[in-house]
Amino acid sequence: MATLDFSYNMSIKFSLPVIKHCYSLRCIPLECENQHVEDISVKVFPENMLTYSADGFGNILVTDRIVMMHNEFTVDVRGTVITGEQITSEKEPNPVYKYPTHYTACGTELERMFARIQVGISDDAVETALKFTRAIRANIVYQSGETGVMTTAEEALLTGAGVCQDYSHMLIALLRRAGIPARYVAGMMVGEGETHAWAEVYHNGCWHGVDPTNNRLADENYIIISRGRDFADCGINRGLLTGGGMQTQTVRLKAVKR
Image 1: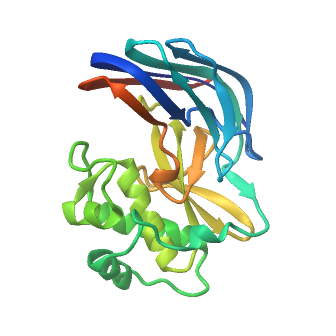
Image 2 (image 1 turned 30 degrees about the vertical axis):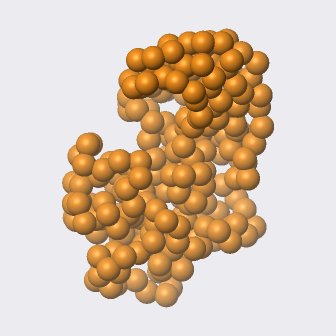
Image 3 (image 1 turned 60 degrees about the horizontal axis):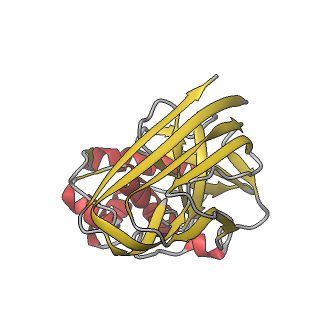
């Protein structure tokens, strides 16, 4: 068990005034079997009435609209989370975690990688995930700016570089190709200054966190914000607005263990 204090601040500045702004945020850590949210504070500027709900995967949504004219939009979330072993019991996984998505479909190059990796029918799913992780790390390097939020697992492999989102999509693609249910996780990691992404693999009735970017199992130093099929289900900030012009976004994150 670990007690983690965290803060997440996002600021978007607009070159022109925003007239109307509807937003949807996934920025609050999940309350789940291996994680307890002890304290939470959410502030949005310009101030408005916040509406809390959940999406189809159980992730917490903060939504509303701002009708006053503004040139800046900020979100500040902070609190305390008690984390445990990164395993969540579940009788049967949601069937959607077994099938490829736009981000996690295996193209020619991922199929070639999969064919080169010897996976036995009786292999432990977690060990298989770590085996795939080693193969991914041997084929791409961590480098920001080479991929974007729309990059698929196949495209990242062809590029030969990527970030945590790409590593996670590639691992999920290979796991599902092997018939192993896997899902995408967005969250925070102690010592990281940005949000992080990893995967969870289903084995023996439990979900196990695997971080392919850092070649390790996710443990008590990780805070889960959202889970889904891929990045599209876990985006932190989405919105529709009128006006705004060019946008400049700044994100600051801190997670520390007491």
